[in-house]
Image 1 (cartoon, rainbow over the protein chains, first blue to last red):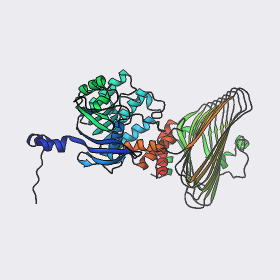
Image 2 (cartoon, rainbow over the protein chains, first blue to last red; image 1 turned 120 degrees about the vertical axis):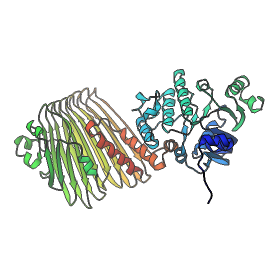
Image 3 (tube, helix red, strand yellow; image 1 turned 30 degrees about the vertical axis):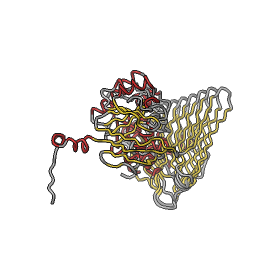
Image 4 (tube, rainbow over the protein chains, first blue to last red; image 1 turned 90 degrees about the vertical axis):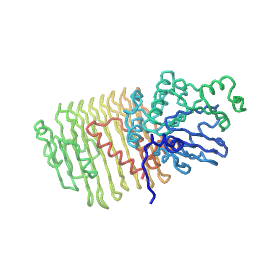
Length: 261
Length: 343
């Protein structure tokens, strides 16, 4: 019978750094992923890897495939993987339903959640019950006046972002995919949103966030890497400040032509 | 704990439990009796002439015996701990006639539970409610029937001057045939809030409410939430009539169809016989949207769980006002309704 030995994560990191990286740190691996929506290929051959505690930013113009990539990773119906695969903690996700992925620890913060005929307090209660969390985990992210209203019905842009991010935090995710947490948000709320994202990352969650304008970036403590998507392809990966600066100076089209390098 | 035990377990200070025609339990806290509160069988209550004179004045007269409960709250008594009335039919047919009188300036909370056991049973319940000047009554009816039951429930209410009537009717399991009708007359400055939450299974249900705003400044807000599952046909006419100046009324009917094999008919009607009244209504019937289900599935809920959450939310939004003491009971019934609806 083969002998097995227990080894701590710290020890593994010391003696076999590559194995540690693969087994312990790695959270999400997207390999050569192509996604079709309504008969059209929207994401083409994307490769991406997010480790625990890392923040990754996805930049790109409207309609470039950023949201589609997140939705495909979540496994939403209609977002069909035609090539490649997604691994979460080393496990292949293809074929798993969205709720099964959520239960593994993947959360999707929707860009514009549609109004639900359910009070926000009921959602908070149900999600809290499922993940064993309560409002305490939200800290200064209190939802107070929104709680007894129908979720997202008549919410302002900032209120909707705040509520949706709070529900995402309540899931205590290992991987939080945040779809434009900074759009339609005033400066004060942006600070709060940034603080909440930093806290999630500090607690070990991997963050994959889509930003159209980059407004959230200055409120994030450390962005490990940024990726620019144009026409469904990742055309540049690197330091977020450098890429944002390049986008501002040259535009996405130039990046797509490889002019950055 | 059974549905009935849960319903009875409200920390009641007064309780009346009748099975078929037998009074199984009748309790009244001594302190209440000393204050002049009465809880007794109607057959005994009618020995008082003033009670006899009240019979069939809030409802059209029917050929019904004196089986049922009589509750009287003397003027100036506030009782926020709920009084429980429970009616169970387990064989043949049960006919009951209840009379509730809440005296001037008094407050009362009543939980009325009706249920059936076994097959081929029938329940006919006639309830007359009188709220005197400035009185307040929270009246919560929770019904759960076996499929093979036939039910007729008629409630007549006279809401006196400045009195307030909060009516909550929740049906957890519907029988194969039900006719529920509520007629409410509201005097000067009186106020009514009526909510119906109905989970319809296979069968035919008619839920009718008529509110007559007869006194100046009277107001009513009537809301119904119907969840229709396979094989159900629900008709839900609601009428608010304004017969005096400065009256206000609002009707809201919402239907949620969980099965293509179901029919919901909502008929909100407004009738104004007096200029200066303000009457409004809104109605909508729909199904659970794919986007709502998908959203909840990304939060970790299976399709069945997501449906249950959406049904629960839909029902909950129909409750305008719930007496604090009965919130736990109502919440547990709503949980069950959502679970049954999604199953």
